[in-house]
Image (cartoon, rainbow, N blue to C red; front, side, top):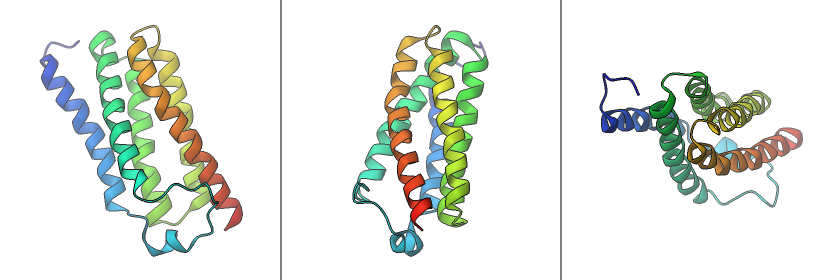
Length: 153
C-alpha cells in the first residue's frame, strides 16, 4: 500500500470513488421515459434497485481497496477504475440520452471489466474477487434486462 495514505484514509478514498459513481444514478433517475418502455415480466420492482446497488457499491469499494492495499495501483485496480467509470456512464447513457443500445454496449464493457477484475484480483486477494461475484451476477441479469428492453422497444 502506498505510504502517503493511511489504511483508513485509503478506504475512505475508495468509498469516495464509488460514491461518485453511485451519485450518477441519482442524477439520472428512470423517469417517465423508462416507465413507458415495454419491459419483461421479470423486471424487478423499482424499489429493489437502490437496495441492490447500495449493497453492491459497498462490496465494490471494499474489493477495490483490498486489492489496492495488497498490490497498489496495479492492473486489477486500473480495471476496477475502468469498470467504475463504465458503471457511472450507464445511467447517463440509458436514462438521460435514452440510448438503450449504447447502454447495452457500455454494460458489456462493464461486465468484461468485472470479470477481468475477478480474474486479476483472485491471486492478489481472494476475498476481493469473491466480493465482486454478486456484482457480476447482478450485471449479467441487468444485461439480459437491457438486451430485452432494447430488442422490444
